[in-house]
Image (cartoon, rainbow, N blue to C red; front, side, top):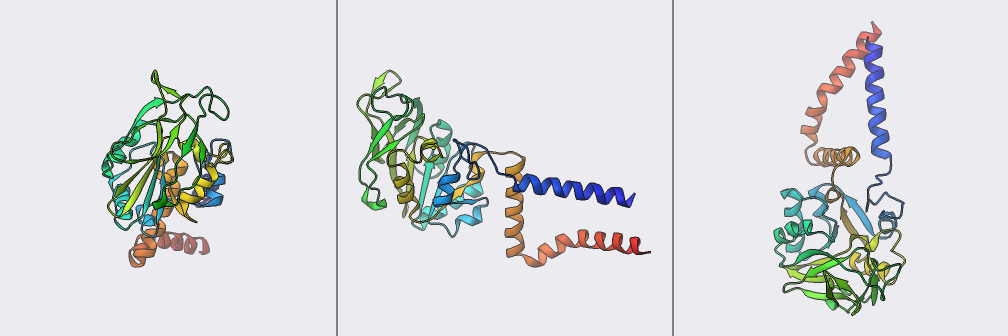
Length: 273
């Protein structure tokens, strides 16, 4: 019986290890090497983070809000802005508007997809946008290629990138804002209405890589929980939380681990008898 329990426990631990170590291949994942992944961007400057506390030491963070973030993460982003940091929000969906409101940004993403039959890289759904120099963030890239970009309602934010005159969205003619920057507290929020701008298949187009490097400013955090759930992501978040808990409260961690240690010791002693 003990051998069966040990075998089942070992199998579960092995399965969890495989799930944890296997590349997380969701769209925009930093471990996804496919066309829709962010593995190249991660190798250049993006550092995956899983907990709100990991934002404390970051100056720049990239967020793709496919889901609504819990309050702890939003507070972490607000704290970055209060310290003079930069939050880069990449989204072509109105889902991101909740996060923008929570950060105090008067900007909204309309969800109107932009097509450009003339000024594009692959087809009309990959419009090229002209980027203006933005000295506060040292942005000097001239053109970027977007993927399924949508129109941004800039509010009182500074418009940094516009699509061409030949672009169309919702029956209206362009140009349309696709990248804006807003000052919040001591920091900046950058909104780009195309999360695909830095994915593997587009990073080599136009000034996409240059823009990534300029926004990262050598290194940036990449908030993975904003990409959504899944067993693998949940497991990685749990391990990250456990590491933080162990580093901050070693005595409590030892107490929480004590039952497992005692159980293992008891099983070992019984086997020796």
